[in-house]
Image (cartoon, rainbow, N blue to C red; front, side, top):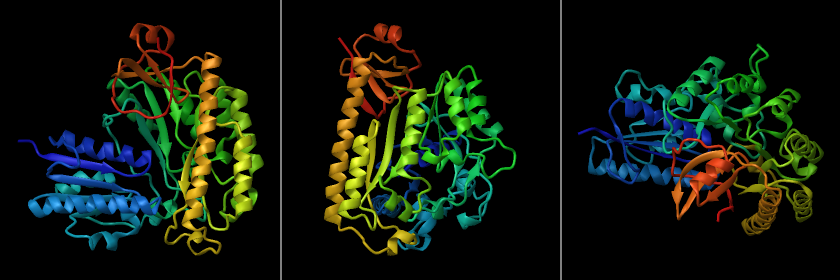
Length: 433
């Protein structure tokens, strides 16, 4: 009987991509992927440390795997990811863990299992090279997510990620294009480029090859039909990147931009590198190219020093801004960050109250965007995924989920791609019979 592997991922899409790569190595070695709650020979937990909640979820998953090992001592438990990068000793105290793998050695997990490499847990801040991690397929996905960058050099006051991911490092162009070409052979036609700080792609190099240049080369691949970008910092929408948007026939008019807080006092306090005016200008630049673009924004409720007056400024700014949805995060103190020891910590009840208020703003903006899409009959493109509850569905290039009862009608009105997945997310609009 084939051995079984179970993997679980917490946090960002970079983690999800890396888990797909890890599982792909095991699949090639003859392992069968099973649900994390089922008995397996190997458990891989890819952890996250963005919030206290993700720390808790990571520990809980590790404990579940330990219970399986108590039933079968031959079970192997491998822990990796941002929580384990910063909390090695704490994880070891949870129980019998076989391996804790640093964030730049995930591609070597199979070698560790086969005892080809010795375990050498490294300080991520000493890492200078991008770890090449490759997959020939994506686990349970329609669109292919491609990791092209890792690390961050910004060290915002509230954020632990740079300490868990290290300095900015970029994937070599030849390896990105090779990865994409391989996945097009597997039927993928939509590609999402991502990283810990995607807009920094190539900036640590000396060859003047940046994200815009990579996008130009990807667009040349005929089999690639849609290119989507993950989160980009507002100040990194450079002139060359905007110039690419103007010419591109494949870029999705959907952009996710971290704001975090909507007043200059708090932006400066948190070490952010722009003003609210700069942020507005970025949105306006994008909208001048794509008037119907979907704009998603990250915002944090209850950062240290955020008074009621300053929070009201964030509310006013967001209410006046042209965007599609918010990802609202309640502030969570992260050990080792500057914000952890700042004065003016906001009480949890106020954080929850502010989170609800921001969520209401998001819901209103989302409905306004959906109404705009329908009223103006905006043309949507997307990957046809499957039929559910009588509707064929696709997550469009505008991040609007399409539902149509007739697949023939869908093929006539929208770009028809291969159905590859059953799992999806996004805002929704029904345009069926």
